[in-house]
Length: 426
Ligand code: FDA
Ligand code: NAD
Image 1 (cartoon, rainbow, N blue to C red):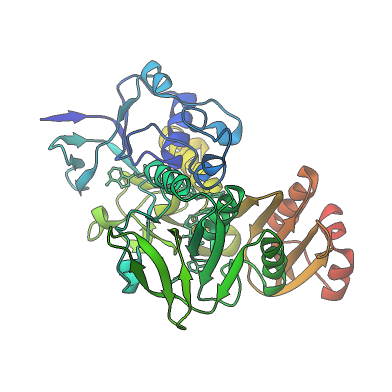
Image 2 (tube, rainbow, N blue to C red):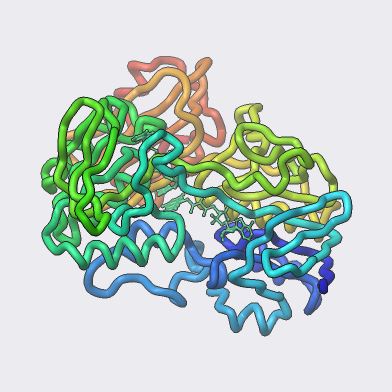
């Protein structure tokens, strides 16, 4: 059995939702487009899962955060897809792909063929077993990638009011989940191997601000060590976490956020890979011209830095997806993707944004004892990256603009003195 579509989007996450909106805006006929997702729900704004979804009181729940509410655009409910003649094949895993024959085989045994394929398979959470630690299957050990994971966190939190949580990993998931746990009155210890949190992006000085803030909320940091094993009760639930330095932490629950791996396996040996993802050109086209890749799974040329990068952030997923659709439907009017990397996070009452690249020399500015501060990264006399905590809309726009323009920096001491004024003057 089989069905044929002109366009197929493989994956039903953030990129798929924004691609669907772009298809409908640029004009797609009913029955031409299909989205296949192994999630049981229509595309949604994944960032909500570590923030609003985990809050006590009135947590965010579908359908409120289907794409594309994250950019204040239309909310694409299942009804919207139906009305636009876009086929949503949900709860269906694609288990193999043949890019030569232009077919996908689903776990239900259906063959879906396409003329043009957009790969938007995102990524999966790395598991502890991949680092040699067993215990991921225990009912109180949680990961966070999809709604099923988020529901599990909510249930486990409810099962241990005022209990102890150990958060493994000091990256985005670790930091945002720790905040949500504390808001739910759970005691939190964070464990990670680096010397400070958010080591991929933060400088030690920036990290120390957030760590002090977290300490003030009662969150404890156990740094420079990793988990070596769990202790379990007779029901198989984790009761304690043992670290490689011998420390034992009581645990009623564990959240693991130790990074991701892009979902490339269907295409290994068929498409060119790079940086752990599927390599695309500036038109988001893979090594097979009928196949595009977008979002977390795509390694694309970041023109601004003259380098291929794979980004794991929502803005990049949204914009790369829209760009691929523009290329597909309006090729003459669409040039190469010219993207300024943008990352952000909101935790407690804090909120930061980052643009560009954290490479080169760093200059900090602003009030690290107050609520507004930041950093600039300068390479070869040019501004290449900007971070700001506590900024206004205009200030964030200013640092984005200054970074996009690669503004010239003549003197680092002057830049430090000018601080935010440097970007605002551009
Ligand atoms: P995404 O993971 O969204 O979607 C991939 C889809 O493909 C899923 O539906 C998956 O089930 C499906 N799929 C994969 N393989 C399949 C197969 N073989 N068959 C069928 N379906 C398949 N970023 C940011 O900038 N700010 C933020 O605040 C956050 N917050 C945040 C919180 C949490 C909890 C997570 C997990 C992630 C974030 N992010 C973020 C990152 C952001 O959500 C991420 O970059 C985008 O979701 C990437 O979008 P994609 O569509 O590429 O993948
Ligand atoms: P991450 O890459 O941000 O952080 C991984 C962390 O795991 C590292 O900081 C390190 O501390 C830790 N680690 C690595 N190996 C370890 C080990 N063996 N033991 C213990 N700790 C170890 O990944 P994440 O936090 O898991 O986030 C997953 C994905 O979700 C990322 O793609 C991220 O971009 C995305 N996300 C983004 C946001 C945001 O942009 N605001 C929020 C949540 C999630």
